[in-house]
Image (cartoon, rainbow, N blue to C red; front, side, top):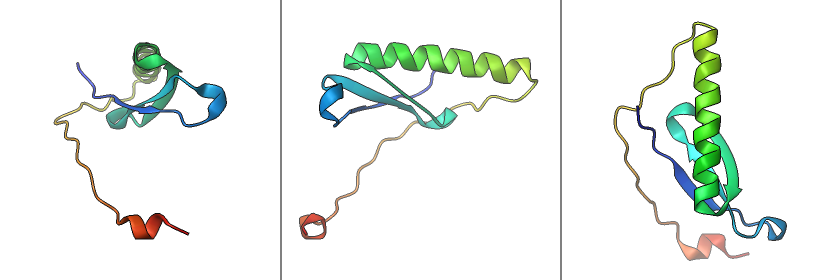
Length: 80
């Protein structure tokens, strides 16, 4: 089973070079150093989370379709 992972740079100075890894279908977020580190952390988190769900007899969400879209917010709204 494949799950989409959305990567986003962490913007805190002490975490320079780190990325958040969001797995929307599972509603999970983790982070790691660099994109590879974030993907590794996401893989480990997803596997542990799924194993825990299965151990409890709970269902695991299946990703049916992955889409990425963007919206545009006017710059004027972001200015103080």
